[in-house]
Structure formats: structure tokens, C-alpha cells
Amino acid sequence: MSPPGRLPLRFSTQTLLLQLGVVLLVVLLSGAVHAWLTFERLGREAENQALTLARTVASDPSVRANVQAISRQAGTPPPAELKAGPLMAVAEGARTSTGALFVVITDETGLRLAHPDADRLGERVSTDPSEALAGREVTTRNTGTLGPSAGAKVPVFAPGSGSGSVVGEVSVGYSTESIGQSLARDIVPIVLTAAGSLAAGVLASFLLRRRLQRLTLGLEPEEIGALVHDQVAVLEGVDEGVVGISADGRISVFNAAAQRLLGQPDLSGQLWQDAPVPARLKALTLPDAREGEAVELVAGEQVLVASARKALHRREDLGWVVMLRDRTELQHLTRQLDAVGTMSTALRAQRHEFANQLHTIAGFMSIGQHQQARTYLERIAATGPLKFPVDQAELLQDPYLQAFIGAKGVEADERGVSLRIGPETLVRGQVTEPQDVTTVLGNLIDNAVNAAVAGTAAERWVELELLDEEGGGGTLHVVVADSGDGLPDGGDPEAVFAEGFTTAGGGALQGQVRAGGQGLGLALARQLARRRGGDVTVLEPGNAGGPGAVFMATLPGTTTARKD
Image 1 (cartoon, rainbow, N blue to C red):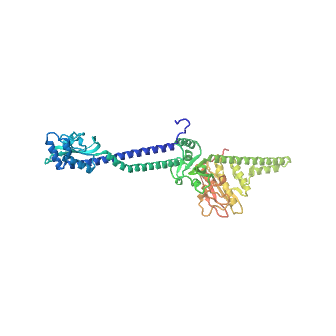
Image 2: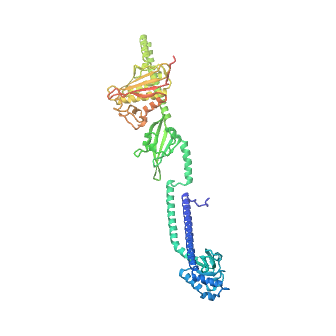
Image 3: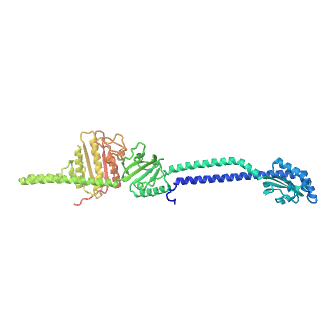
């Protein structure tokens, strides 16, 4: 925990400091290793140089002869004699000409015969000469009387003996202080390289921090974790479908509700334009689309309301969010309510008309006109108790169909269209699925009335024929024709069942759904009929000037035999 009163460092700042620390550590270690390797290289070069010089001095015939002569003597000459002797001259000449720290010559016992410090002559060397006196060359790094050095020891063989008899050895050393001076000269590029690496590392760390902040939108890991938990809780806990499209056009979110509504598996990671979803859904995210506009579309057996909005964060474009809401149940409830409303209107009209008829009969009876009352009753029995503006309505025996089509006839009459029942109509059974029949029959009649109103024929009419299958099959066949101008010339009859096709407003429209759900009627009717195992098809496309298109619907399982 951070001390009281001090705010904890942001994760991005902690990451930056950690990166800078790692870069600094790596640079320091690299520089140290580089310096050590350079020091080792210089040391090996000094050893090789010392070995070469020692070999040169040890192979000098005069050196070999003088060392052998001294070795044969009893005892060692006094220092003054050695100082003035030829071995001292050779050793000092080699040392001064090569810059070596020392060139030392000893006899076979390790006593100094030549040494830069004359006071050390005749003494035993401070380092072990046994390897060289045994006839083996060796390189060394040690500290002697003259200080630390890197050098070599080479045996001195007796003249003419080849490598058989060792009479002494030659030690040559170069000061490691001179190696340090050489390293000091080479350290400048090492330091510059390390500084350059450190600067590059710091710059890379800052750039990485900026990219990390851009990728995480400036959020800390704890905030990102909380957002993930919230996202899962929200996206999976709502009934609305949510589809997220990133700025690069890929699906980033596709929650379970969206999978259920669109009938697709999780499409996360796919390109939005290639995803197997309705084209009208993709059109919501086009550059020219109006943001937030809600449209209705059919997906499988469901009616969806979709809208899309831009996702922005601090003026950064994050892509699109598409919302999907299921309106299937609402559509069903609306149709059911329409059916109830139609029946209610029909019953109210029937009650009012029936009351008038009873008053008329009572009037005939009160004035003693019994024959006229009988004739009036016979006419009522022939035409039904309610007079709708629907020609040949007496062909309908089912009370539900009478009321529903009668109410549609009233609506059509208000728009100047005559609704009539065709002579081939024969419905012997009783409707058992009024909601489905209302949806299909209502949509077909409404579309036919719209086509008749928009048509150019002088007489506006809609003709309806209904037939149920005999033998308890329960299938209701519906044929609807109108006086309109038919389908567009050269158009595909199947196009009228696509979402967005409507003739409302005087023209066939494709690719949009108008307010109030226009453009979905035929698509919904076909979906419902096919779900029951039936279908809605175009029998005749119609002609300009009339008659118009003829539609047929087959609705299995919607009627049953009437019980007398």
C-alpha cells in the first residue's frame, strides 16, 4: 500500500520506470562486459607480446652462452659485476626498446642475472620460475616487485643443446597499468555506445508507453478488469442484442442475445461486411447512414428493430454499436389486438343494427302489419343480421370471418374501394387460429386496398375468395385480387416478399421500411404461413390499368369441422 496522503503511481508510469530501470541495467551490464572483454583482449595481447620478446631474448646466442657460463661457475657473480655484464645490457636494451615493464634473466636456480632494479640482482625472483626452468613456456599475470603485470616466462637452453639442457629463464612483463591506459582510450567508444543504447531504450520506452495508453484508452489494468466484468454482466444479462464493430471493420462484440436473434454463432473476429447478417443491418453502419435511426427487419421468424450509433472516446473513433430488439411478440400482440378491435367494432355495429331491426319489427307488429314483419324477417335471415358493405358476405358462414372481413369492408369503403367476396368462396369449417388468419388475411387485404387506391382503374375493388379443405384437413386457402396496376413491369414476383417492399404512397419501394412497419406485411405473412407449413405466393402479376396482382395464401391447421 502507498503511504497515506500519497497517490499510487499509475500503471503506465510504473511500467515506464520499470522499463527504464531494465534498460539502464542492461546498458550497464553490457558496458561492463564490453569493458571486461576489452581488458582481457589487451591483457592477452600483452602476454603474447611478452612471450615474443622473451623468446627473442632467450634465443639470443650471447644470452645463452653467458647464462651457461655463469651457471657453470660456483656461486653467483656479485651484483656490481652483473650490472656491468652483457646480460644486463641485453635485457635493458630490449626493455627500453619495447616499453616492457621488466626483462629479467635468471640462472637455472632462479637467481636474477639481469633486472631493471640493480639492487635486486643476485636475488631469487619473486614469482615461481619452475615451469620455465622445466623447459616449458608459460604466460602469467601476477604482481611482482615492480607491480602487477601480464607477461611470459621462456626457458634458456644451453648453446648447441637444442631443447635439451635448461641453463636459465627469461621473464618479460608489461604493466597492467599501461593496459588500463589503453582501456581508457578504448572506453570512450564504449561509453558512447552505452549512452546511445540508453537513449534509444528510453525513447523506445516512452513510445511504448504512448502506444500502451492509446491501446488501453488511458485506462489502468484495474479499470480494464472492471470494465471486462461489467461488459460481461451487461452484455450477457440483457435481452437486447449488441453487436460491436471496431474501427477496422471487424466484429468485436457479438453477445448471446444477438446470436439468438440473428440465428448465428459467435461472429467475433469476422469482417462486418462479410458477416452472414441481413444486408439492411450492415447498411446501418455505412458512412451515409443516419446515426440512431431505427429500422425494422425480419430475421428468420422474428421481427427486429435495429439501430446503430458511433462509439467515440475522447474524439477517437472506436467503431459502431448496433442494438437489436425483438418485436416479434409485440407484432403478435398488435395483430391480436387488431383482431379483438375488429371484432369489437363489428359487435358494436351488429348490436346497433340489430337494435334497429328489432325496433322495425316491433313497429310492424304494433300497427298490425304482420305480413310485412314476416317479409322483413325473411330478408334478414337471407342476408344476415348485419349489413356490411361487402358483396356476397352471405357466403361466409364462420362468424369470425364475417366480422373480420366485414370490418375490413368498412375500412375499404371509407377509402372508396369495394370489398367483395368471390362466388367460389366456400368455408364449411370454423376458424381455430384467428390470430394467424388475421395476420395473413389482414396483410393481403390491406395491400390489395392500397394497390386499388393507387391504381388507375376507374372502378376500385378488391375481391376475396376463401376455401377450406373438406375432410377435416384444417387448411384454409385464400385468394386476393385487386383493381390496381399490378406489380412493376419486368419485376420479380418474389421481390414483393422482401423486407421494405411497399406500394404505400403510390410506388413500389425497395430497401427501406416506412414508419408504422410498412414494407414488412408480405414478408411477415409469408414467414407465418411457411412456419405453419403453408405459403404465400403471387398467382398473377397483374397489368397496368387493371386488373392488378393476385395473391394466394395457404394456411394449414387454421380451421376445423363445424359442430352442428
